[in-house]
Length: 243
Image 1 (cartoon, helix red, strand yellow):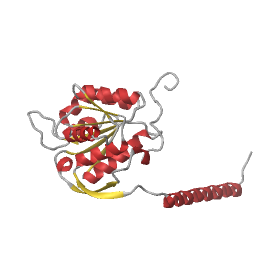
Image 2 (cartoon, one colour; image 1 turned 60 degrees about the horizontal axis):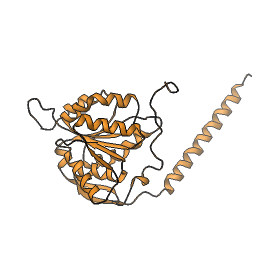
Image 3 (cartoon, helix red, strand yellow; image 1 turned 180 degrees about the horizontal axis):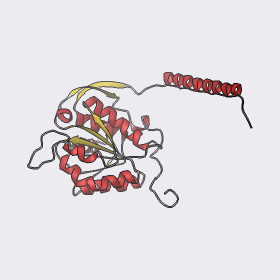
Image 4 (cartoon, one colour; image 1 turned 90 degrees about the vertical axis):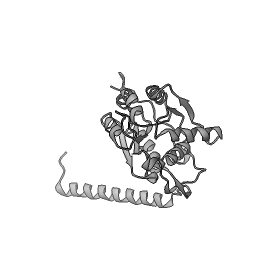
């Protein structure tokens, strides 16, 4: 059926009006929303990463300690002993095993978190493209540090360079505040139905990880239910029904 120029213009005007009404509705909803209470503090990047993980209340953290990311697992382990979260903390035999724990938990539908640095990332590198290729989201905090050869633990991004072509989304935080914000954002980004990918939150070892700054965070009583209404996304592994 042919359509005249005038009818086409009328359709475009009607579509524009619908979009305008939709945007107005979104603004009205946003203005009526109530954000969780916030508070200020004086915390380091590692402390902010642990705080975000505790508030999200991941199902599993598979980990192996390595400087300068060790403090994240230490804080979360201490919090677990005090009943502050329900994260199942699983110490592995090494970073390769930790990556396997995380990948396995994510394939089971769990929300998963890990933290590592430098040679620890290299040890787990084999599994990273597998997880992104099969599209199972998780969050990995990469506290950047020189890859030792010869022995060197000073700060640089040589470990991050190995990760950027593995298919993982990379968020790079400049300060402790960004570490917290991006850890909250990372899971929502990775779990989005149009994304479905694991996410790295990277930040400078020693400088950002250990130096304290004035920060703002959601109330210490905030939990993952305040950020994530629904559960983890459905399994997305490729197969005959979903090639």
